[in-house]
Each structure stands twice: as structure tokens, then as C-alpha cells.
Image (cartoon, rainbow over all chains, first blue to last red; front, side, top):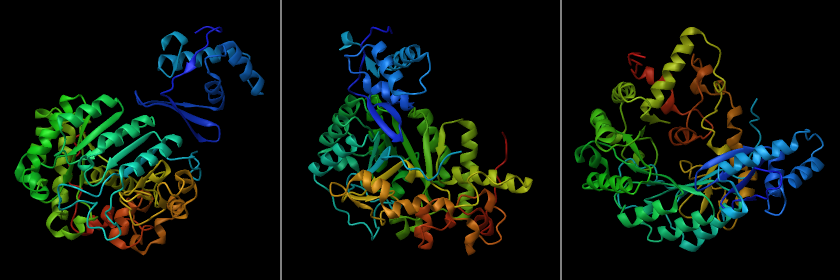
Length: 94
Length: 372
């Protein structure tokens, strides 16, 4: 996953907001569920296929007061993990 | 520490009695013969509208039961509605109506967690004793059909007076001959039709001991392949822990001493076949609202009766005359509220069925040898 990539969420995946800003991402075809915190929810909602991951990370930094300096690396790792689980897709993946 | 007062925005799972029709009349069925239940079905459109709401609520799983879900001719349309709303599903069935056609359709959804078939014995003699002639052959055929289509076929064995002596042969049939990964066990409980036929089907204390001993032995013979959330195997596992803790003077269990069981109402709720929203399909008399008329999220978060159930865990067992002087209180959860209700008339009461002290007073012993 690169900072210039523009991944988008899989339309199959459900964002289930449970308590406060905490949520579960759930893939009904695989049955896999991933717990995500408030920052993860923010990233998820920004993955629209238009923004690059660098832009996503910048928006996270702007919205979260306590965002760490590694926010870009953390965003790339988070989205890479979701991509491996088929929760997000790249443009050419249909 | 877990905050026991917080409630999710919506339930993760909804148990749905999809129909009040069944082609069998099993003598210990928890569903039928309940005077609080009207036994009416909803049309297809009502369920599809409700499934759309479940989708908007981001419910993850539905469990379809009844009644027999496969009696509904519109089952394909209903499953399509569930899948379209990005949920996974399970079906609880007697197995007798499962055809290649419907199994292929279920497999094609890719969103089925499992289909559970009830098989209560190793032969028609034991299975059909409470389910009626021909049920065994058809259930086994249904199970094989599911397996042939690559569907996770789960099996539930309900233990009663007519099959308690057949458990070893049943385990052999299921695990060795039919290739089932694991099967679940429980016992005929004092609910629904079982209340009408209690003397004929419910285990005596001596039979309960036989079941506990046999299942414990089978559990060692087939590690991890015999499951129990309730019934004799669950009881003996829990009661042995309680007895060991009492004998050692161990500190109270974290969930002991209060009505902490079962906790399901924190993650799931249920709907009757007539559309009434209820806390659990074992508590169908507690009506919280009605689908497509009341908001599911509103009912989930604010129904007084549901929130009262959620506070059940604060009630100490020492409040009950039933528990007076019991040495097991620090290790006891009070067990199932539904059985507490049918046996005592009160939901907020420990279940006598799961009471170790009562079991011992009736001559029961935990005579299972510890071979572990």
C-alpha cells in the first residue's frame, strides 16, 4: 500500500457502530469481524476511492488532536490489513 | 473492568421464529403448547421489511427457527432478503424437509453460518420415540444433503428418557459414520410441550447422572467434539467446578452469587412468528414491541422489560429463600431465566433445574471419575 493509493471500501462490508465511536467491521461473505477504534472509524469513512492515503492520513491528523507523528505509516498499515482481509479494494480490483 | 450497564446501539444477533408451523410434534418441543404464544405467521413482505430494518441497524447474524423454517415455501425469498441486507444466517431445523434444491440455494448464498439438524438417537427406535415415525430416516437424509452441498451441518442431540441409554451409539453414528465435526447436547427442559409430557420425557435424577457420566466419558473419547451450553454435560462441568471451589474454600467466581446468567440480552434479542419482539425465544411471554411498528433500536435500548432483564445480574442469590444457607452461592449464577420462570413463575429467580444443592438433595451425585 502506497501513500498515493486510493482504495475504497468493499460494498459488502458492514460498519457496525456499537459503543461511542467504537465499531466492528463485518464481512458477511467471510464472516470475519474486526474491532476498530475511533481513528479506525474515521479512516474507514474517508476511504471513498477519491482520496489518496496520504490525504486520508492528513485528514486524520487534522481531526484527531492526539494523532501520533506516525499517522501516515499507521494508516498505511491499517488499510493494508483491511485490504488483505478483502474489506477494502483498489480501483482495478473491481 | 467490563461496564455491565452499557448497551450496544443495536443487537448483534436476532433470533427469529420464522414460522409457527411444523411438520412434526416432538413431545419435548420448547416452542409449542405455550399459552402465551398466538402461533400465527407473518406474510413474506412483513419479514422482508423487517430484514431491511435489520440491515440498517447493522445486525450481523440472524438465527431462523420456529416451528420448522423449511415449511415456509417463501424461504428462498426470505433468505435473499437476509443476504441482500448483508447479514449471515443460521437455520435450526428438524432436517426432514431439506431438499437438494433448497440446500443448493443456501450454499450459493455464501452467507450461511450453519444449518442445525436435530438428531436424538442412533436409530429410529430412539429418535422417533419423541418425534414420530419416519423422522430419523428423513433427518439423516437431510443432514447428508447439507453435507453434500458443503454447508456446515451442525447437529443437536436433545437428551430425554428414551435416548439416555443410546448416547454412545449416537456419538458413534454422528462423529464416525456421518462425519459431523461436533455435536451439541442439551436435555428436554420444562418449557412448551415438555411441560405437557414432563413425566414421559424429562430425565429423572438417576437418568441425569447416567447422562452426565456417559457424556463426560464421550467428551474424553472425542475431545472438543461434544458441546454443551446447557443440559447434563454443561451441568456436570459447572457443578464439578462449583464443588471443587466449595471444598477448597476458593474465592467467589467473578459471576457468582448473583443472577448473572445468561447475559444473551446484551448482544441479541428475538422475534416471535407473529412479529412480537421478545428478549429471547425461551421468554415469549415478555412482549417488548412489534416489528415494523416499533423501531428495533428503540426497543433494544429503551424497552423497560429488557432493561430490567439486563439488571438481573445485580440481584444477589442471598435474597432468595430458595438459596438460604446454600454453600454454593459464591459460585452459582442462578442459571436460565426462562426455566426459572416456567418452574417458579418468576423470571428474577434462580432456576431450580440448575440447582446443585437440589440435585444432591434428590439423591444426585457427581460420581463422574476425573480421568483428566
